Image (tube, rainbow, N blue to C red):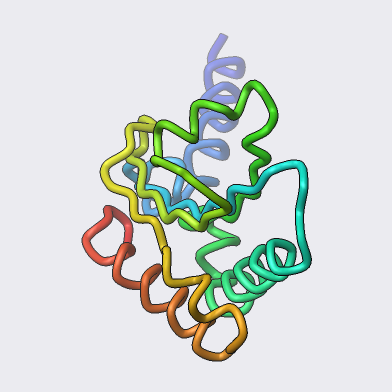
Amino acid sequence: MIKNLLASFAVFAVIFFSFPMGSSVFAAPKDILTVYYFHTQYRCSSCTLLEDYTRDTVNKNFPAELKSGKIKFVSINIDEPANRHYIEDYQLSFKSVIVSVKDSKGQERKWENLSKVWIYLRNREAFSNYIVTEIQKNLKGISGA
């Protein structure tokens, strides 16, 4: 009986002490910033370029945040029936880049349409600077930032 009790305690101790107290297992849930690119089935070269520049900018400038899950990039075809609600949710009238901050429960806290992406589309550096600045602005104040 004592042997079984000691064996059980040893197993418990190994499991318990394998997880450091600062581990993400015990961490509070965090907000997530999503960079959405909304498009339709028909995609011109400018629309494809807009998506490529946005994805590349996020990947290049926020690799740690992408890896940790704090930021994600999602491309969504709003012509698909399941995605039509985004048109009303974000008041979309054409292909758009939206930055959305949601809490750990998936409730949207804020969002912003990055409408100047079309102005900067022919200047990749200005485009990238705009996207980075807007993401950084929206990252400020979110939990876990």
